Image 1 (tube, rainbow, N blue to C red):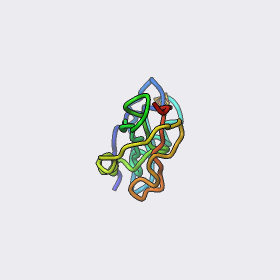
Image 2 (tube, rainbow, N blue to C red; image 1 turned 135 degrees about the horizontal axis):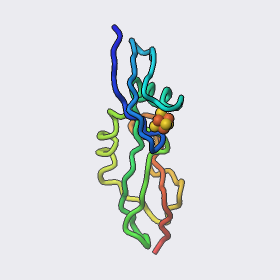
Image 3 (cartoon, rainbow, N blue to C red; image 1 turned 30 degrees about the vertical axis):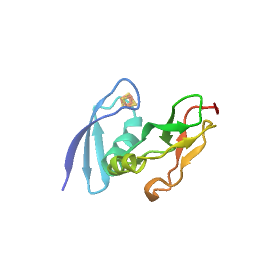
Image 4 (cartoon, rainbow, N blue to C red; image 1 turned 60 degrees about the vertical axis):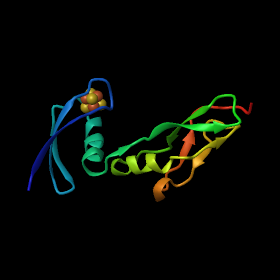
Amino acid sequence: MIEQATIVCVVCPVSCAVLVEFEGDGIIKTDHNQCKLALDYVTDELFDPRRTLTTSLPVDGGKAPLVSVKTAQGLPKDDVLSAMQSLSGIHVTAPVHIGDVIVEDVLGTGIHLVATRNVEAA
Ligand code: SF4
C-alpha cells in the first residue's frame, strides 16, 4: 500500500516540508524539496530515525562540576529515553578531555558516549 507523509527536512535552514510517497521500506518519490539532500534525510526519518543524545554528567575532582557529553553517532530514536535513564548516577573523574569515551556501547548499540569539553583536575 502506498503511503504519504510530510517530513520537514532539517539538513539546512530552508526547512523544506517534504511530501514523501513510500511503500514498504522504499521511497517512491518526494515533492516540495528544493534539493536532492532530502532523499537521504527522509529515508532515515521514515525507516531508521536516529537522534544524538546530548547531556551533562557530574565530574568528581574537577575544576568544573559538569562535563558535557554526547553520543558519537545517532542512537535509534526509540532508545534515547532509555539511554538517558541508563546514565543516571554516572560520575566522571577529572581530568576529562574532549573525545574521551565516558560510556562504551550505550545500551548495546555499539555507540559510545564521549566528552565534548575539557575538565581539568582541581
Ligand atoms: S531539501 Fe535541500 S534545501 Fe530543503 S531543507 Fe533539505 S537540504 Fe535544505
